[in-house]
Length: 267
Image 1 (cartoon, helix red, strand yellow):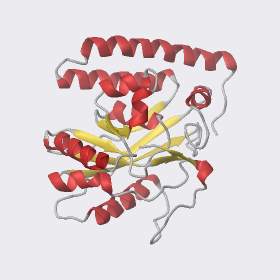
Image 2 (cartoon, one colour):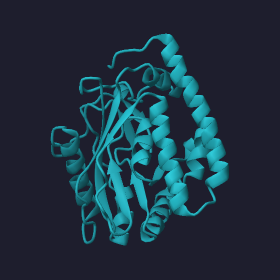
Image 3 (cartoon, one colour):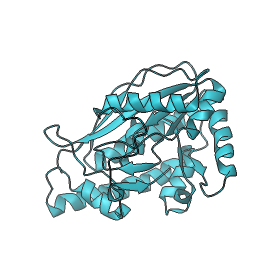
Image 4 (cartoon, helix red, strand yellow):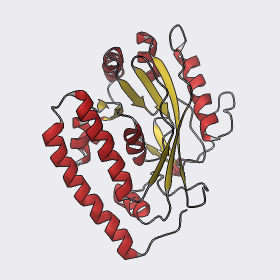
């Protein structure tokens, strides 16, 4: 865990975050209907600003060039992952439908193009697949977290294949990415990890109090989805993300070495 700041500095960061959220509302009301390139730039700059408010330094590789739409697949540690990716490249996220009802967060998510998945309904998988496919066909990037939950970042859960079907249907590239969080000396940090019974408020308090916290985002070469089986593609994507993140290779039929307390249900 990263070194902790004194209370006044932690409160200063949280105060800056509140002002930044208000600024985000103003920007959304002003630019959400603007042409895509302008709105995309606003989202990326605002996301980078959110990381700065919390004292999180971003070290991101440039995304590989992809000629058309792409499905970005990544490991999932924290709600902060979304802003790490958005600060690097504008994408649409797939999220659980419950997020839509969260105060302010759900409003932001809807207006930044998030696709909401109602996991209790069997028809939802087909609908979300069609929505992802439509955006990929339009040349956009869509990001999914195929683990289906967050972890503490020490290891990964197996990738669920169903969200990758849209890339197969469209012949779109699948782009593996890996996120890790580090302390002041480059050591592993679990400070941003959002898992177990932790509330969003508790997570914010931890992150705002961390000294020298850095987010690292890496990409590997795109995987060609055309003609592949989705389970094979999911295994290839998982192996690529594991290699990027420095995790051990997955064992055959691996479930997870992480206890339930180190995961949090997500989308």
